[in-house]
Image 1 (spheres, rainbow, N blue to C red):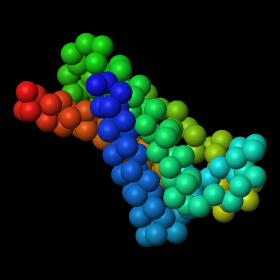
Image 2 (image 1 turned 120 degrees about the vertical axis):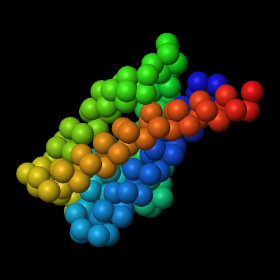
Image 3 (image 1 turned 90 degrees about the vertical axis):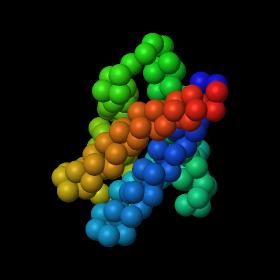
Length: 149
């Protein structure tokens, strides 16, 4: 059940993060959505011209893994919502910092420069939203399971 719950949480939070960054890119022109999906720096993977949908699935796979890890940690004992939020913020901390290496490693993609602090702020806001979705979705799933039993 932990894996299924983790997959569910990872899917929805990853979907919302991706759609949020796509919307931000449409509104602001800042290409963080493209940065999120970019895989042109990964050997072998970069030899294929992947569709946007396939690159989005790659993003979702990472989110599914994060969701499973989050649920595994959250199920270890009873945490308050505040503690679950802190766990989520700590677990997703690397995603905030990834802006810099991802923007530096991009080969052909038109992504923000690592010095673009506006783009970095949008990236942080989107990933904070993702981090806050993890405990919210976890609690929603818990309530739904409790109600069905």
